[in-house]
Image 1 (cartoon, one colour):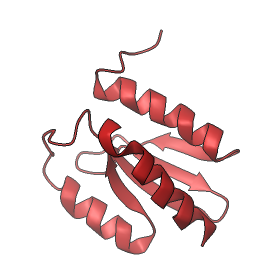
Image 2 (cartoon, one colour):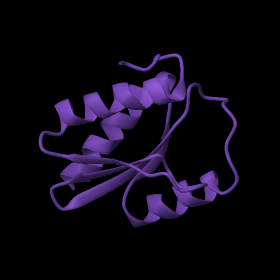
Image 3 (cartoon, one colour):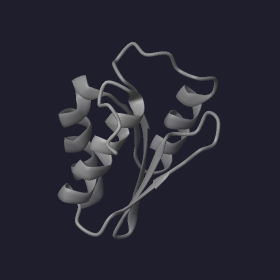
Amino acid sequence: MARSSRLESGFQDKLTKILKERFPYCLVFKIDKQGFPDLLVLYRDKWAALECKRYESAHHQPNQDYWVSVMNTMSFAAFVYPENLEEVLYELERSFKD
């Protein structure tokens, strides 16, 4: 049963489908650890961490900003929400090509 796209979980489902279409054979893992980004994406020899939000001003849990920042210095990490989805996908594509 599909989860509502109005919920964060529904947005995660939609994003996972988009990632698998845009990056064939990528692996997408749901991370269930407080403060860490929601999704870990493995593609070829690269990785990315994505924190999904329902909208731009949605509440951030403790440490989310910290971990997204740290992981972004290591590879690629970002907050993603419907309003910036295409921008994040573009940056992710650039990161995976490097």
